[in-house]
Image (cartoon, rainbow, N blue to C red; front, top):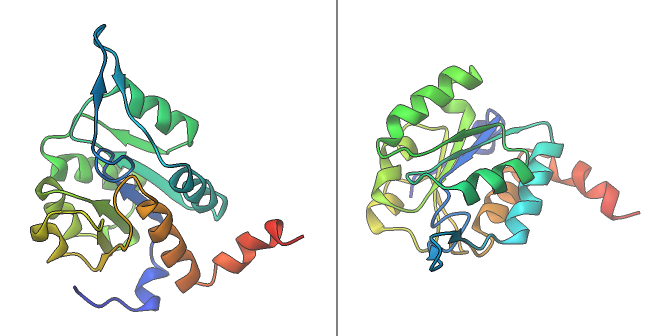
Length: 175
């Protein structure tokens, strides 16, 4: 795992993440009528809300097209949503253009080999605990929590705590 210092984390302005296997446990349920179901962890959702409250942006880059993903992105007020992205690097380049940020300003969370090109380019590349070994080997950070089980919240807290933003966000809860 590559070392990153707290100064580098202060450059992060946008959190981008894969969906299936990161915001979910990677399971997709399809009912007999063809509708799709996914489960999302509420700790992750609240973490993203706190991230946004800190004035930071968020993005989803998913390999699959899904109405459920779009609904969740809308619920969480995600700034940028790209799907389907079989070639995630192309979607990442579009994110850079759309956000007007540089790779060093982006943290990205992934779980599979499709995420390697992005993790290798961003300022803070993250693999969830249950990611494939190839991704873990090039990540700056590997979560202790699995995808769909609070891994995104862990990353949000890690960045915000190491950049001094967490305590300000916590004030509203400590009244």
